[in-house]
Amino acid sequence: VLRLLGGGFGLAAIAGCSTRSLTSRIPDPDYPGRAASLASESVLPLKQAQAGTQGIGNVVARTSWTKASPIYQSMDRMTPVRNITVHHDGMTKFSSGNVAATKSRLETIRRAHRNRGWGDIGYHFAVDPTGRVWACRPLSWQGAHVKDFNEGNIGIVVLGNYDIQRPNNAQLTALKSQIATLRKAYRVSSGNVRSHRQCPGART
Image 1 (cartoon, rainbow, N blue to C red):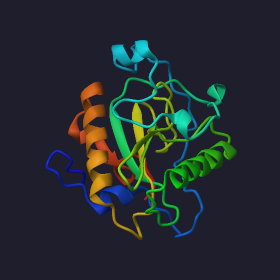
Image 2 (tube, rainbow, N blue to C red):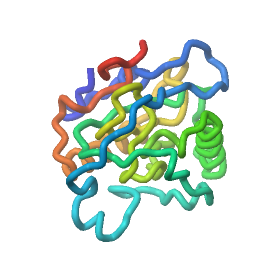
Image 3 (tube, rainbow, N blue to C red):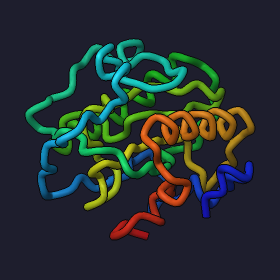
């Protein structure tokens, strides 16, 4: 169970979208088969929407790790945000603080997701082992990270495989801070912050 407000965010919560094998295979977050309806209200808080920002909080810009643009015709507009889901990437163990290594890992995930026919990397944010938060899929577009539960759901991936490693304090601090910022911006209740396995219909 996620207990972010109480300061406890355990290994089991991050490992909620674990893979069946401990390989470098990119896990499948399950893109939904149905299209989302267009939101009748602004997805981004007004100031961010007017500024056209792709992230909320202190994040590293998407353009710093990829020059590729999303394929917008293969994506759905985000509906009003009601949920936040935390994942790990489930690949190999990853503890590097090297910026180039993080960029490479993000690009590997993005390309794997594009190869499945998705419009972009499935997550909205990523947290690396040093606690840097990276902007991924623009928040104005629905993610691809929980089957049949992507509408209005912000996806955050913690880079690494937390079936075989443990999160460090920098990661947990950054994750909690980013979630707190998003919760405040979108008025998301603590009960609607979940790990992958806690989402309705999610695979175990």
